[in-house]
Each structure stands twice: as structure tokens, then as C-alpha cells.
Amino acid sequence: MQTIHHVNELRTLLTRVRQTGKRIAVVPTMGNLHRGHIRLVETAAAHADFVVSTIFVNPMQFGRHEDLDKYPRTPDADVRKLTDAGCHCLFAPPVSEIYPEGLGQHTVVSVPGLSERHCGASRPGHFDGVATVVSKLFNIVGPDIAVFGKKDYQQFQVIRKMTSDLCFGIDIMGVETERDSQGLALSSRNGYLSESEKLTALCLSRTLNEAAQRITDGERNYRVLEQQALQSFTAHGVTPDYFNICQADSLAPATGADLRLVILAAGFVGATRLIDNIEITLPE
Image (cartoon, rainbow, N blue to C red):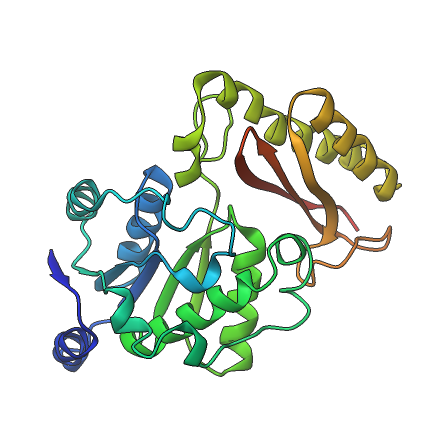
């Protein structure tokens, strides 16, 4: 696997790759890779001839009081994992390569509607940072396929809409959430959790599954279900951020007429903010 840090060098390489008729896939990440990230690389390799993974801890998507400086960085381990997974190229640019004039002077890509609810309400500007850096990576790499995890379901939908609205012509693939043996969604932020906090964090997936089962069994009073879930979070040691039952594409509050649903949840275990979700398809 080749590691590249500069845009021009990457473009030169990918021009040669493209001239051979190979399909290119990109897997954007912020590093500190776990099994979920590697599944994305493996999925990309199954659908393309040449896989580019990116590692860039994007300052534009972090709020003023969030953990940018403390965000875990494990470059040596990441290179080993990507190499073992069959990745062909790692693009790991410095901040100055992506934002040469600084964040304050940089064009911002914003996806209205989808970006403003849920995590967007809790983290103002977050999805503007995501959309901006992903659009830059798309323009730098020029992939045929881009692969994202569906653990951050809202991010996945924001990127899908941005890709469609801006006519990128890229196939966006979503990969289901990887979980540990107890059901905890894998996340780079899980490294912040103590062993007892990891047990507490299981409340997210457990509450999601319980709500999904009640909906499958016929419950349609979604607002009551949401309030009960938030109470369950609090009772089990999770400080709730939100628990929202949504239409799967628009992420608007679900109604009884909707058949494709997603439940989005976020909460704090200690000082660590975690997210999770579950998708539901109801019979007509």
C-alpha cells in the first residue's frame, strides 16, 4: 500500500490508475481504525479495482468545545490494518493541504434540512464540516464508488443528498453497523469508555431494539415511545441527547403512514457522546 500526503501526488497516481480502465473506490475515515472501518475497505475492494482510504481528522466538523485535540490518532496501527485489508492507497493529508487558507476563509458546503435535526441540532455546523470535507475528497479522488458506515445514519443520508444535489455521479454505498459481541456499536470513541461505562453504553442498542420490537408489534404512538426511551436512558445511567423515530430518507418525525423508519439515538456515557440507530421496514 502506498501512502500519499499531497493532493497533486494523489491525482497523478489516480490518473494512471484511471487510464488502465480500473474502477476506483474511496473510503473516507478519521483514522483510529476498528473492524467497522475495515469492513468498509473490504466492501470497497469487492466493488472496485483500486481502493483509496483517507485518514483526515477534519477540524471543520468539530465544535468549539469538542474533542479535536484529544481525538485518538493511531497512524501506525491504521497503516497495518489497511494493508492487511487490501487497501491500495492511503491519502493522509495535513490540515494545511485541505484548508491552505484556514477554516475561516474556506468555502463551506451545506445540506439544508437533513443537516439541521438530530446531531445537527446538538452540534451546530457539524454536518457543514462533513459535507465540505467529503466534497473536497470526492473532487480530489474522483471515485466511482464511495463507501460509508451506516452507524452514523444521518451523516450517510447527508452525503447521499449532497452527492445527488451536486451531481457528483458517484455510487454511495452504505455498510451496516459493526457491533461487539454484546451489541455495542463499534466507534473510535469507545476507547474513551471504562469497562463499566461500556456496560452502561449497551443501554443505547438495547433501548433501540426494544422500541423497534414494539413498533413491529403494532405500536404507532411514536412520540410516547420516544419519551419512554429517554426515560430509560436516564434510568440506566445514560445522559440523553435525543431518541427520535424518523422517516428513513427525510429523517423527519415519523407518522403512522410511514413504512420505512429509522430510530436515531444519542447520549452521553460519562463524558463520551455515543450514537446508534436501527432501521425498520413495516409491511404495507
